[in-house]
Image 1 (cartoon, rainbow, N blue to C red):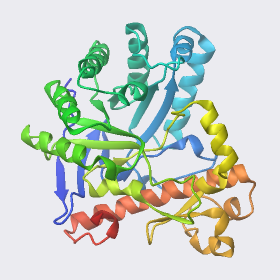
Image 2 (cartoon, one colour):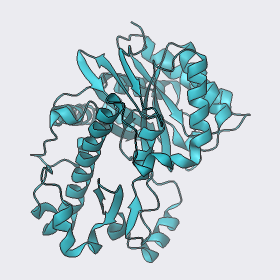
Image 3 (cartoon, rainbow, N blue to C red):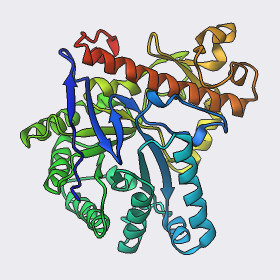
Image 4 (spheres, rainbow, N blue to C red):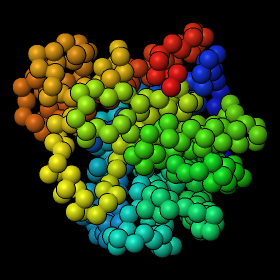
Length: 370
C-alpha cells in the first residue's frame, strides 16, 4: 500500500497561507483546518459534536521500562489497549493518530534500540489510522550537522519497522529545528513516499520557527507536493502561561495562518532538572496562571481566577460542560472542564476558518497578520 495520503480537495486563502483540504482515511472523511480531539481530559459524559472534528489524537510517553512492560506483561499491554479503545469510543471513532514519545530514563539522551523501535512501531501502528514516526525530543533538541545523519538513520529504522507489514499511510515526525535540517528531513520523507507530517514544536512559539516553516513549504513545492501534503502540529505554546499576565494571545492557533492543517495537543514532559521545577513552584502560582479560558471572539486566553463574575458570560452556551463545572466545581474538575471548553472552542474556530477559505473571504483576523 502507498504510504501517501491522497488529497482530493484543496483551497487556499488569498491573503494568508490559511488553507483547507480534504482526504479520506479508513473510509472516513478528514477536512481541515481541524482541531484534533484529545479525550484524556474528557469526563465520562463529554461529547464534542461529531461535525466539529476530523481527527482523534492519542498520546503515550514511553521509556525503556514501559516499553518492556507493554511488550512482555499482559496487564500493561491490556491497559494500553484499553486506553486506546476508550479514546476511540469517546472520539466517536474518528481516524486516530497515536503519537508516541520515547524518553529514556537516564538524563543523557539516547536513541531507542532496534528492539525498542520495533515495539514503538508496533504500538503506533496498532492504535493509528495514520501511523506516526515516534518522536525523540531529547535527541532533536541538540541536532547539529555532525549528528543529523544519525537522526535520519533513526527515521529509516522506524520506516523499515513499520513497512514490514503496512497497510496504512505514514505521518512523518518533524522536530522544530533550523531550515537546513528541516529541508533534509522533508526530502527524506518525500523520497520514501510520505506526504503527511506532524511538527513537534516542543513547547515553543510558532513564530520562532518562521524560517524553518517557510523552508518546509518551499521544499514541498519544489517536489510538486504543494497541494498534496498534510501538516499536523503539536506541543505548541501560546506564550508563558506560568507568568502573571491576565490575558495571553492565542498564538497556538497561529499555525492555521501558516498553512498548517491540524492542531494537536500539548504533551510536554519536563525538560529541565527537578530542582528547577521546585524553584518554579516556589516563585509562581503555576496552577492559577496556567488555568486559562479561551475567548474565541478576541483570541485571548484569560486567567480563570481573575475573571470573577465575568466568567459566566465567557462560557459558551453550547459548551460541552455545565457552567457549574467551571464556576463552582473543585479545582481539579474546573481545570479539566476549562480544557474541554478550550478544545471545543478551537474545534468551532477551525470550522469557521474553513468556511471562510471556501468562500474566498479575506481573512481579517489579526492573529494571522502576525
